[in-house]
Image (cartoon, rainbow, N blue to C red; front, side, top):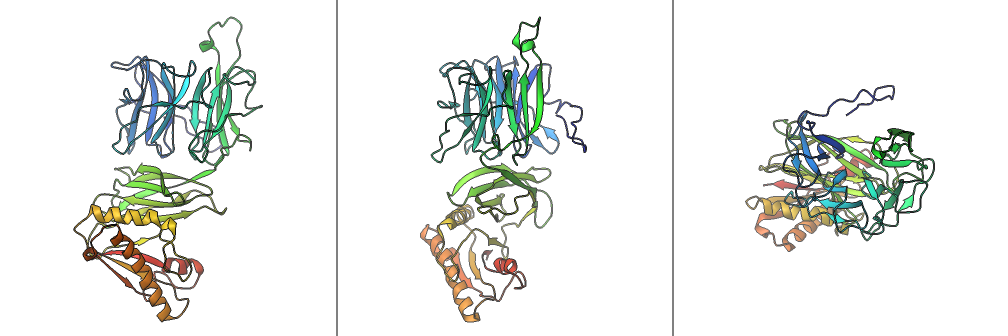
Length: 440
């Protein structure tokens, strides 16, 4: 790896880890958005499936684990290489020459299932793969734009860079040539675009050199560039990162951090915080509204909300999270329950949070809880008390309707009597308008 210097130049490359680099051939690496999952190609290792296989290593603290072959669900008896990982490290695209494809090289995809196993790799099919060479995939951090090189479409040279966008039905749209000056008469070999769509890198193998017969012996160079609008991914991404701590001991803990799209109730990212440092990183896309949850065994979950549905500040966030033990008297604010103004009916996008609550209650069948409603100071005291009571009851009714025993639940409205912040601004009033879950 090489680190960028303060003046923008790149420092001298250094071996990433002696646990990864060996006397065998390692290359074509891809890393997850949090920098903790590395997939790379290695050839002719003992007990390999094919001549070149994909291996995975995970980082805890500053140490990389011993690489593990991804196995026969992913690797074939042929050549498997050129991996690219989704931001959360749970979707893997790669190139393979295995039989049954559409050309000499095709692009395949595999995902990590709930048990932590990689699913059987499947061919991306048309329109991505062609009868020619389809290689070097790169999935943007947003997950909605795929770049790759191919000579199976009419282009400007041997291998050109193309891009595909993911449609609403989950299928890839027709690839589009990225044109000059990115593509030339030479062979473009791979592309990388930063999450914010500003910085790009591309490798290019030079045209035939006199006296050099083998294509593999031709010079290959890496270029950096500012990304023009026509090359940018469809969605711009930013990220939130920080550390997860035990709220009592203040020590870092390993936790699951999950990100849901509130409009679709879809789990879009699932990462783990580092067991030694508590560090986590989650990628956020512009134009989306998210619910984020941090959870660990025997801890109350932490609920957070990110609304980027309208354009506003879209800079990276640093956010440390503190999880309380599941213990009597502890409470959490439920930040992804939504009501219309002065109404108590739950909006449809509240279902993500409600379903998380149901799962939490089933995980800890011995606990009893109070759902408490709170308001700001706008309106009369009596009206606010009634509104807070009805909103708490709406949540209670949903939970009971999902089969939770009513004996484990109660609800109460507190009106404006327990503000978290002074009611001196709209931002503070918004924090005071809330539903809490308290362990009894």
